[in-house]
Amino acid sequence: MADKKPILSIKNLSVSAGPENDPIPVLNGVDLDLYKGEVLGLIGESGAGKSTLGLAAMGYFRRGCRVTGGTVTCAGVDLLAMTDQQREAIHGTKIAYVAQSAAASFNPAYRLMDQVTETARIRAGTPAAKARSDALELFERMKLPEPHQFGLRYPHQVSGGQLQRALTAMAMLCQPDIVIFDEPTTALDVTTQVDVLGTMKDAVRDFGIAGIYVSHDLTVVAQMADRIKVLLRGRQVEEAPTRDMLASPQQEYTKSLWSVRKIQKPPSVGSKSPEMRIQVEGVHASYGKVPVLEDVSINVRAGETLAIVGESGSGKSTLARVLTGLLKPRAGRVLLNGTEAASGYRQRSKSDLRAVQMIYQMPDTALNDQQSVGTIIGRPLTFYHGLRGEQNRKRASELLEMIGMDPKVFLQRTPRQLSGGQKQRICIARALAAEPTVLICDEVTSALDQIVAEGILRLLEGLQKDLNFAQVFITHDLTTVRAIADTVAVMELGRIVEFGPRDVVLDDPQKPYTRKLLRSVPEMDPNWLDDIRREFAKDTETATSPEGRAAP
Image (cartoon, rainbow, N blue to C red; front, side):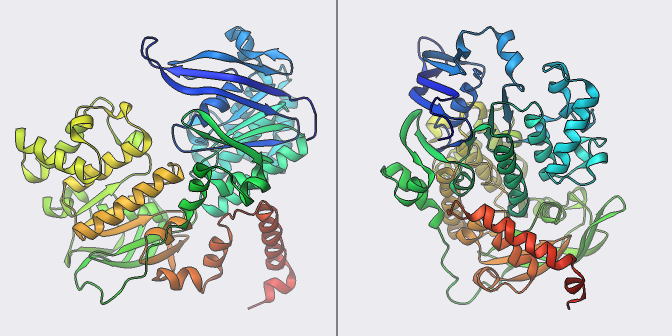
């Protein structure tokens, strides 16, 4: 360890939520020591207390949470004994935070430079000119495009990966002692994730800071952390140096976290279904004058799952919008169950609207917190099937049982009373209420921990066997592709560059772009990130050299 004395020490911390007369334990007697120059990884399933512990390192607790015991000491100062004003003064200057969603962390009404430098100017008292100069240096260090112009842009004018790097620059600008990284790459595609992880790792090394990296993705934690602490339901399960933990986890729960990455759907056996559920023929689509899809063609049969993969901006979600009629194509057509569908959803028949249902990435924003689960599932039952009253309630209960949730317990609950995995199951039930022939899943497991994600994938697989719907599964996680797909379409810059059976595309890719995507999937080896960055750097040098440009 770089220092024998910890820069941060949490002792016997207990945190509860809910009413004082009926508290719900969130953390239960957890200890944590963090030393300068090291990164501690926190892993565990949803509800384990990872984010609560990470925020506790700042002396911060979410609304409704309260400390019932323990201490949080940073550089010899008890953060819990500080006033709110004193704690606020060190946030961003001594202890910084990098959130999961960069898009939600920036104000869309202000330019990036003004927001990146705000803490340095207001809390640290850095002159505006120096704050801007330091920010430009960080933009260059983080390989942001046109660094001298980058800060003039608004958040919506840059990619998700670039915005995440800008958020990291904001955290590093005051050169804090500690940075909390809370799931900062969850929503990024694999190639962008390599860039962002590399940026963060370089920043930790260059500034000599201490870090806490919160994630449900073991392979990501393996690249960033010197030590790993495993949490389960607010308690510490085990802690060890990263290499020791990866080589030989001691507890059964930790071993279960390792095993969930081994799911793989068996190859299709026998002849394919003759029923073609969805066909896309030569589709071109644009946002305004900007082309997004170019000559895209796919087909998916009954009972088959097509995975669509590619980097952010490749056109995956745009294709989903075309399939659902939310975006009219400039050219080409979409056939549903063998019949051409209207290009816009307003012109589609109720039968065609029912045929294609979509499950979104973020169940938090896809569900109305003001409505009960019964109402949420019941609305499509009324709209598509005319079910009301007791018939509606009975069918909603059947759908809840289908997704493994007891209607007596959950029918009257609201989304705010559910976990992330439970919310996603409700989204699935709502989609199934329409009795679709095509189910579109847009990054439905990317925000979930691996154990919950495994449950969702197994649920979808079982439902597909029972109901025989076709499935279009949009994802940037190639581990998920192996778990669920029959066929794979690889998209790059609005085009499908490779299409075929899953094992053919993943095991013997023909296109350099597909090979790069596969090489960008993190591995459990702690050396993987450094190795792949060197490999990509060599590829770039070769491509830009005179010999590389001349190569066929």
